[in-house]
Image (cartoon, helix red, strand yellow):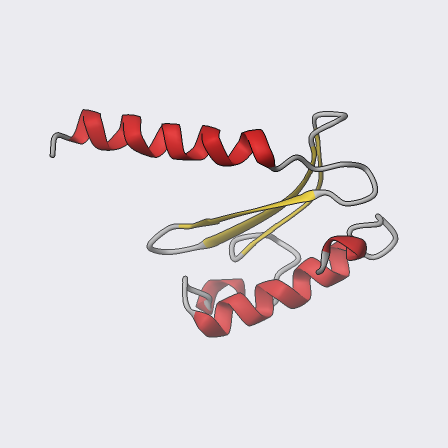
Length: 96
């Protein structure tokens, strides 16, 4: 399959999911992106169009960020950083 067609199909799948899922102020949407080297997490309020909180394995507040990679151990540490960054921002209702 050609790469252009793969990208087009991925974009269609993404749009199909985004029609059904939307973040609100009470329950923001969680967006997770994995690359070969890092993990990125964002909590998004789609009604206001803002990012409520964001954490990654490269973020300055992440402890030991030089040794973190895109693996299970880093995901656990990223999860704890997400919990800390969401305290007081009403993200916890979204399941974090």
